[in-house]
Length: 93
Image (cartoon, rainbow, N blue to C red; front, side, top):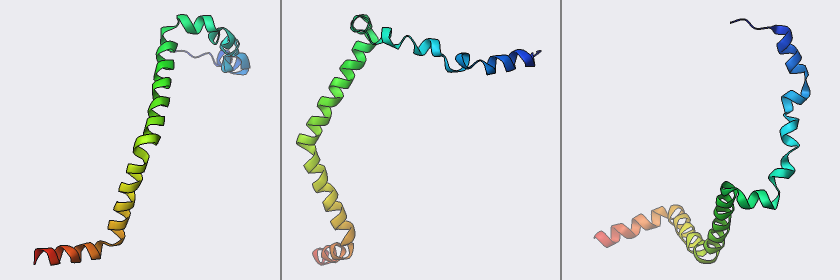
């Protein structure tokens, strides 16, 4: 395999080649409403994002307080482990 060092250096000097400016110029075409409607991938991603937002709201409404209560119970249990062990010993006797 033979590598032409001058050609490689010239390719690295060309900043447009490194940054792919031609690809960055076409973002306007990508974000047009017409292209979003006919692109099945974007429709699927929008559906996933919409479902995710709904799931976040449902989590905060229903389950956040339950999880906070469980965490407080665990913290209480860890901080008072000796008290809990003493209660278990008295129950066993």
